[in-house]
Length: 143
Image (cartoon, rainbow, N blue to C red; front, side, top):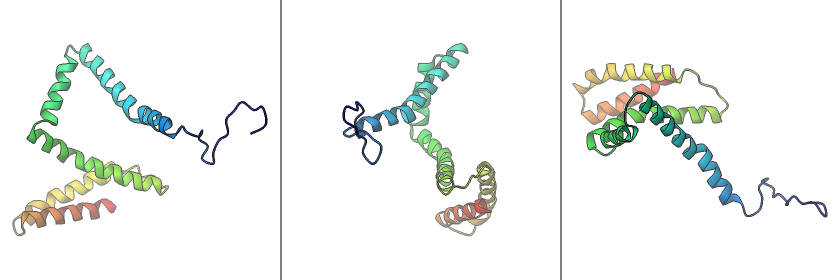
């Protein structure tokens, strides 16, 4: 920093000293909270345009999808493959590999596991069938 320079000195990381907590909270706000809030508001406006009450609808979704045991189970069941896809995409993108066919891999793996499960469950315990189908799906998805 030159004498009389009004800009504060930057550290080796390029951040202003004493500001990492504020920067982290701003990043969280911009990357997580703001998009979800905007999505809920815009979806609520669409629901209003179609004549539905957005607050009642969001309450219904929470009650049925998360606050009841069967709803939570169904949500987790549908969410698990998407979380695996997201994890695989993170690994691929960090390695510098673009995988544009990830939804095809998911479908192919799901078909293989769904075709093998009824046959395997007749001769194996349920836990072994689950483990084998998971492994089969992972193997088929890599092809």
